[in-house]
Length: 319
Image (cartoon, rainbow, N blue to C red; front, side, top):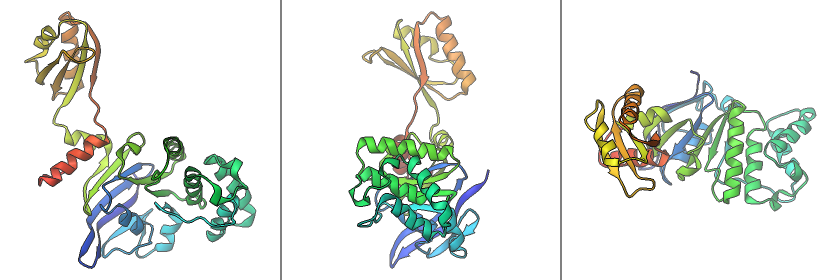
């Protein structure tokens, strides 16, 4: 596994205020890394350090193997950064906006026309090529800014609150665009304090609060570490109590709950075994005569993970 971003004991202080405290994380190449935390948690500070816009007080960080302190020019070649607020310019057309940044990255003039055409097509702004930038909607400006981050074909995209201020349709369009970028092989680090924005796209997450990283890794591993057992929901057309008696006391069954008022009527089974043990439970129900219409494990989402980890932190637990 190739690591494209690594930080070690990364710390940033402003006077007596510690914005980041000994943050250590790794982001593998090709990941969509959701950087989650409340406002003021340290997300933007981390991103500004990774993009060389801010120096750490101590510690170190590397992007694509380059030090953000000792090799800043190489880092900037490897990163495309979309801040939460970005400037656009009066009296500048959409294509001119991209051409300006292409020139800043010393992209030859002969290559720019096709490059700009392809990027506008990617973000679905080809029909706005000659439109005035200031006249674009908020969502269009976000997509244009995303095209700008890719003008030099960086390996890593760092996006700070990219969906901020967007309407629901624009958020869906942005989410689909990010999926397309991942399919192109880009690594994406994306921050948000709105968990539903990230739930469908992240392969890895980092949870930060008050400058400290509480958890970091791939979503499946973090979820397994938080769950001592799995909960399976069973919908039945037959008697609930009878079905519950069939599995209660079976190997790896921790608890059984009847939910007769649910629609449809169901039972919940807490299981601490592997998939083989789960399969034996379903077999036991069916062979016992239960009419099962649905048997599936409950799926935790990013909100569940965030609340569990931050709750543990608040009460002095570890993650």
